[in-house]
Each structure stands twice: as C-alpha cells, then as structure tokens.
Length: 173
Image (cartoon, rainbow, N blue to C red; front, side, top):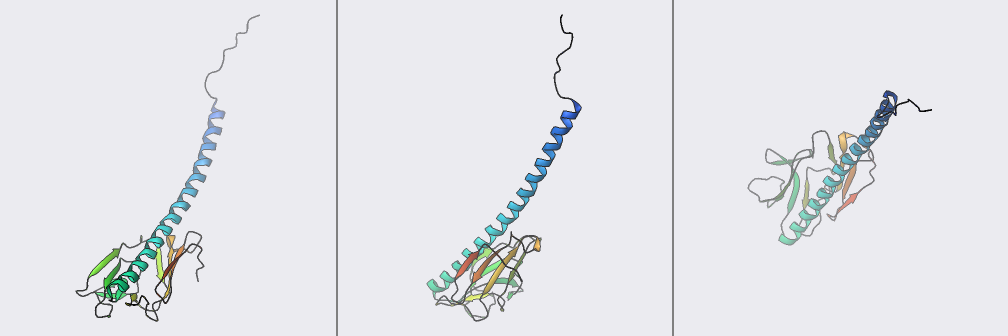
C-alpha cells in the first residue's frame, strides 16, 4: 500500500519562533560583551596615549633644557579641568601660561560622557630640564568610562621624577 502522506518542506511556526528566540538571546549577549570591550578599549587607548604624552613632555624638557608644561588651558592659563584638550607647550617663563610659548602637542579631549581626573594638587604638570616635576604635580590620572569607576577604568601614575606608568587595575576613591 502506498502512503499518500506528503513530505513537509520548510519550518513550522513553532520551530521558527524557537529559532528566532535563540538568535535574539545570542545577539543580546554579544552586544553586551561588545559594549564592554569597546568601553574598556577606549579607556585603555586614551590612557596609553596619555602615558606617551607625559613621557614625551619629560623627554622634551630634558632634551631642550627648558621647562615643558602639560595642562588644559582656559583663557591662556592652565586649569585643573582634564576633560578638555590637553596642551603640551614650552613654558619659558615657568608660569603655566601659554602666551606666545611654542605648542608641542595637543591631546584631544575625552568624550563628554567619560571622566578624566588627576590627583595632583596643581593645575597641570611642569617638567623641568632635569626631567623632574614640581612638588604638587605628581599624581594619578584616572579615566572613567561613562564617569563610573569599574573594571573598564584605567590609570596613569606620574611620579615625582616625571615618569609615567600605565595602570590597568584601578582602585577609585
């Protein structure tokens, strides 16, 4: 006896919904991981660039025999607001004022949603011809993604001798 049953081609509605559900769950997990990686990567890239900028400033001071200052500038004077562009310049008068001094480099500001703080007590960091920095200049830069201190945050430690060190594990206070 011959079977009159037709062979099914395609998916049932139940199979389709199950497949779509699995794809939606996998996509959600992938997006969460991607978002975390992008934030962490952004913080790491910026703080590594900041480490290079600190070391560049120190080398420029030593090689030229002049004071080199690294700070954010407002109305021509260094201020303690690290969320803006960071300017590195030859500070011929050692007064942390840009004036007609030569600008060596500008580091672009961080995104407005993120935060960059520095624990040093002065507005900016001045590197002297021997490579050292001023008494209140040493401290730690901390980059916070979305202004929150978490596993994505990164830091740069600037010690009294003017050397910078990238820190991957951050403890915020």
